[in-house]
Image (cartoon, rainbow, N blue to C red; front, side):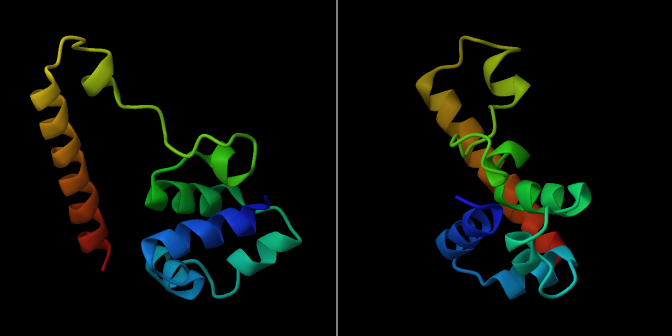
Length: 105
């Protein structure tokens, strides 16, 4: 799967268009569609990866693992989280993602 196809899939799952994604990330119009023929610049692919919470390697087709590795606080610093605490951590992370996206608007 090409980088463009992966971005299209992520946009579809999020319910946004590529044009909307470009506007939100302040990427020039039609830049992402050009990734069908040319390699994306590091700064732009990083913006897209951060937006969707995926790795650059996933976007470039180097791995099929969509999700980024979990952050240090949830798995490495404390290994004995209860199931309830883990659920609360995930809820808080989602809250922060939504807050970040709202601030971009």
